[in-house]
Length: 110
Image 1: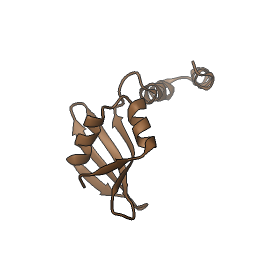
Image 2: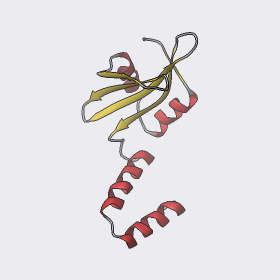
Image 3: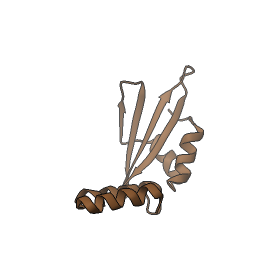
Image 4: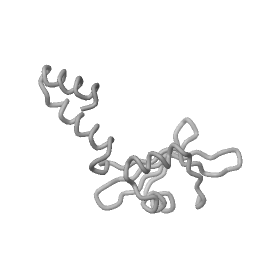
């Protein structure tokens, strides 16, 4: 698996998540772990520095590897994924009133 075809969605998510394509390519070319899923996709993981990179790929009818999605855990600061993860942490330890406020704030986009 050396040639990968990126979907528009996957490339957009790379951009949204502030992940350099070279970082993603390194993950795809030399993964630490590969697992097959029941739906025919494969999950590829690679640990780099303080983050774990994960890609979801699927083989098409021509046996080409299609990259469907790619993310980092923990997410890069300043991204929507990072803000969502921070909000979830805050919600976990919040009182009912604070959870209500955080939910409302999130719904109106603050």
